Image (cartoon, rainbow, N blue to C red; front, side, top):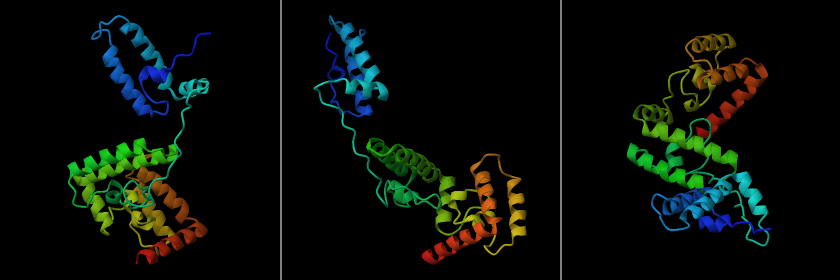
Length: 244
């Protein structure tokens, strides 16, 4: 039986190479071997081998099968998953009132170009770190959101106002309100009838399936139930004591 080709050697990468490194190596070697630019005898055959190697190593399941079938050779080692830093740059932010300046590692007076550059650098670090898939997905979502809010002047004005204690108008931008009462534009002491009234008013102007409508529905499900509302109110009060 013919010996199995060494796809890693064909691409000139280490068996522990990341998907990004494999892709970069393939592009580099493709330019070197393409028949339009390389008339050397054997270049076409090498290009075919390169394509075959990349087809295997660029597909996770195929690469895993290939690695397991490489007897006596260096096995690819999966990096141990890590966690994001607990605070500051690159840390997972809370759902409400996230600190996008700390997340991107920029000062509040940074201009849009500085925000975009910080986003680019952090995006590269996030992409290359061995995070668990769910953590990686959350960080990527937060990176997109942070960049959008801080690089867009109109959104940044709304964000800065919320962080300085001036919440957005009721029924808008739910993640920038401290709690559901702020989102509804009511005091925590509001009666159930007034809350129901307000939910009806706000829902009339909301797009079906929007983040605002989903937040409004969740707020109503909680605040209309006495036991759930009491539990929620206790959390709001605890938060106020903590920040007061």
